[in-house]
Image 1 (cartoon, rainbow, N blue to C red):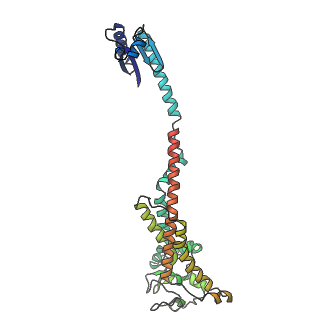
Image 2: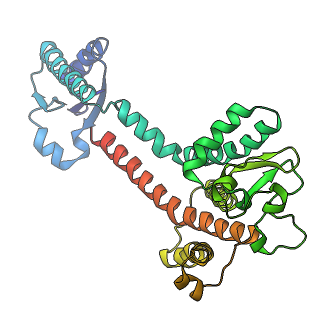
Image 3: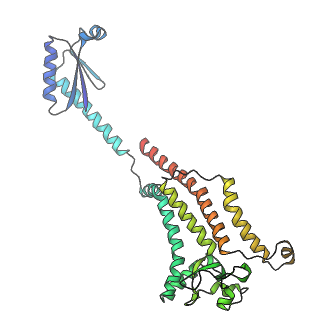
Length: 319
């Protein structure tokens, strides 16, 4: 809207004529009239006493005598100038492209996507034994095959569903009152390839397509993801030293001590006694690793996404 400032004084008939002309022009060129009595300000009185009426319209100043055509022409010029500026601003207004829109959506909803990915990733290995139980061998085997490069899937280190026991450990795990994998299946527990290929049967149940430790890892990541979401993504990242102690330390100690103790080399066997971890230790160390790693990493991802949103916001303001 155009603002018109009229400097006048009481009893000024020329000022009244300008006001009447402005009222007529206002029908076609809308504007706001701001009338100032110069007698209310000594500085204005001294400045405009011999010139009133004085009209300011944008960068233009008109002094008496002021005709109708002068007002019309000046208001028209200011209106055209404002319209031109609006067109320029609109032309240069920030219009996000497809890539920007995708980046913005990802930055706003990344946590939902991450949680969903891990839920699906963990859910499919549980779907495999369910499919086998219902005679759907082809889709079940596709899941086992797809996850095979991602996990060893050893039967004596995996959970089973729909069977006598939830797990069948090696005899070396020394878990009382539990049928071992070798006794339950008749497979030599040192035959890793057969233990890997065994998916179960009606009596023993069917193997989940991820090992016990991996199940715990991904379940713990999902748990922290939900907690992080419920707290409004306000949880600060875990310090790297604490992450090493509570997340990396236990899983490395349990996993590597088991690995090296079972290498058939005299050097390792003389240093580390043969041991087989238990489902409880795998669940505990896997949970600590998954939860601690998510706690360490997800808050940093949130900071990065917030920076992306801030950059896009500043880009929009500038343009």
